[in-house]
Image 1 (cartoon, rainbow, N blue to C red):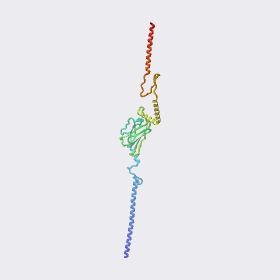
Image 2: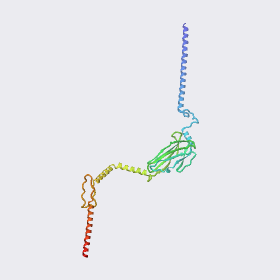
Image 3: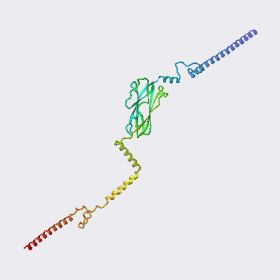
Amino acid sequence: MVGLRAWVTRRRSSVLLVLDALGCVSWMALGLLLALVWGSFVGVVTRSEDGPGSAATGKAPPPDEFSYAEQIEGERRRLFDVTVVHTNPPALGLVAGAPPRRFRVEIPGTRAAAGPGESQAVVSAGTQIGMKLHCSGAGVRCTPLSSERQHVLTREDVAVWVWEVRAERAGTFSIALTMTSYFRDTDTVLVEKPPLIWSVDAAPPEDDDWLSWARDLWRQVTEAINGLGGLAVSVSAIAAAIALVIRRRPPAEGRDNDADTPDPVPDVGRRPPPRPVRRVRRARSRLGRAARAARARQSSGSSTGAISS
């Protein structure tokens, strides 16, 4: 019995040693597997961050993908020149205070003839084109009436830009037209031509324009009233005092007044009409003189007859 127990004990010990060895190997295999999985995950993440063609992967970029600089250069090579017809600014005939005039820029496509009062220029097309009109000077404004950017992709495309130019006062100012070709729909500039700059004169308003004359007169009167308000009040008071003194002056005496004319009677109620005393007395005196002369002639005739007899 003792020998049998010893043999069983030795067998159990050997089995436990085998199991312990197998457990160590399995743990080592599991660790290696986990290390491989972690290394694969880290490599995938690194390649996704670096992107294709990076130095981390050591691979060259695919031939169908370009860098940003190569894309810009390729777009510039595809551009082509087209004719631009625009208004000649000196031909606008601006007048200070007059209604605004239209400044027009057109890419006419196949039709490239410039009319009277127009000029021509060249711009790079085949992409999105922007037109800007800058007005500098006191009293001048340029108001856009169309979109700043328009697509001109072929030689047959037509695009039109319009502005209103208005001069509020007479003088000299400048107008500049800038033409820019953009990279697709971005703000990246492919080609920008040097701006076209003109010097334009705005004439003063015409002298026979009654509306401008009335407007200037009203402005002057308003400024005078605002600046001399106190003086205007003083002048009005002086004028009122003079008018009051003139109304209180006594009436002037007659030109042919003499001693026979009775003194005026003060008004009591309604004033009676004056009696023609002087004229009646003069008439009576004339009749008396005529009668005396007739009597003198009669007496002289009678005396002459007596002497002759």
